[in-house]
Image: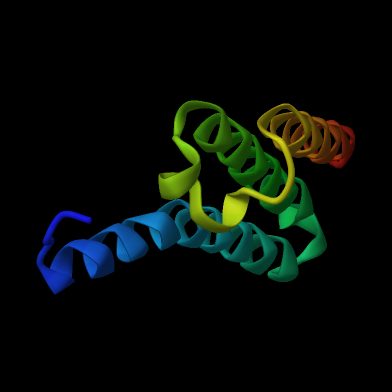
Length: 97
């Protein structure tokens, strides 16, 4: 094993959490917008759907060590599940007034 500084492992661990935290923040913002009132529910759902589609894109392009908690199964299954869920939420958002 090559000698690496201790901060190199910590740095990659922080980078692995970053995509997950960005998606989580997007979902939280969408839920807050939807919580503000029934007239904003469609906008909030659209933000949540967009965050899920962003998660699918991040899982698709990032290597597993940087995708962090977005990695649960194989890449194809993760991307498909996130994309289908994101598209379904966007469909619901489009149907809301």
